[in-house]
Image (tube, rainbow, N blue to C red):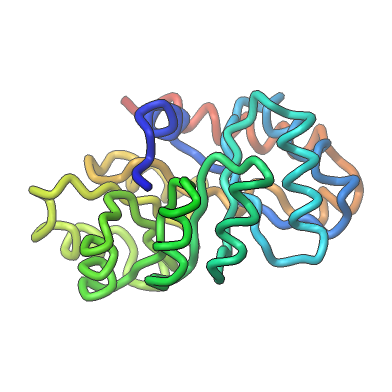
Length: 216
């Protein structure tokens, strides 16, 4: 399923998606609310812990103003489950045709992960027009993305870079026409969550929001 215009608009104008995992379901809503307080209204909650699905349901139920994406979707079953739980979109680290098809059948807007032209063409063949460029910096960063994206520019492919981004390099990515939004996995740190320092998370989010808003 393609991303609806309403979600594309929010991702484009929000510019940053905060990525994080949740070990304790009780942490989920406070993290989401802290991000909102700092000006970030889109997340990628990863399916890397036993608490992830319950955390997703909690955020969907208690923080409806958040645009909720789910990451690390590795199986068709997971794609269906997160859609039923209320996720607005999904992403994956890799390009698995079975997962893409399951997401499409479930009505879940989905961005598979790619870091080579061949993976990108496989995603395009399945109808994907939004893809996750992952791991962004380790794969060659912005120069590599520019080179890879060039032959496909006429198709209108939009990229969601994640992996190795930070407050120093996010601006360069967001200035690229082909980049829809960036993933901010550095905003919510395990140390802040362990201390329940929700104000600290809000402050980091506000710093990122200020940088993002300065980009035309």
